[in-house]
Image (cartoon, rainbow, N blue to C red; front, top):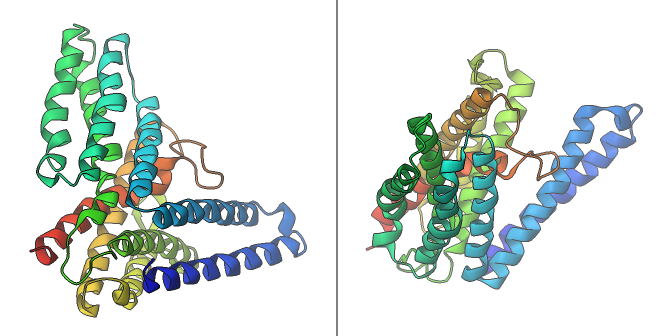
Length: 311
């Protein structure tokens, strides 16, 4: 394992240890054990321990484990998305195709590093095949709405998410064997931006960005979170093949796309009348609640890196 990986995970573990200590201290204070905010904080910290452990084990095992981990995340995310859509009996074969054909093929293409097909398999073949299968069932009630929801689910939960392990396939000169650090860079910047936007919003938030979609998001939180997470990404240039200014620009793009992803996914949840995508992760909701920012930022980060740094 590269020395940079060990140092990075050591730093992440140190931050989680500090967060655990702070959470325990807040809970021990008078009234802290009855505070919903403190309880939610400790639940989130515990969930982060589990998620970091899973990612750490996958990275230690190697590329196959990372691909399998994200394939599993895509499966559960797809299930959460489909659960909130209006489906009928005529959709069953199309949905089976999405879960047990399109998803495994997409991640297999990532595994064998077939970029030419991996990049178009779902946007072209998946988008054409799924409505065709649904049409053969001849159930025309709200057909367009149902097909569009299924295509969107496949695009977000499988295609976009698969770009995270696809980072391991990038053949960057002088960076051989370290591609896993690109995955770490993406996740740390995206999740760091989410957390910092929340913190700045709580401390200084006044003006809402989109109150009808996400009442908790403020301009003060957005600016503070994006600027500080961009600085974090710049500071992490040493784990990437980028110069500091390049790492900063890419971190900024990641933060902006992550924010837009969270906003879009919040809009879908509001449309379906739910607060969270699921309850799989204590303190975090469902899998989609954790990767909603990543699924928008991962394809942009992947293709920018591939275009500029892969010969």
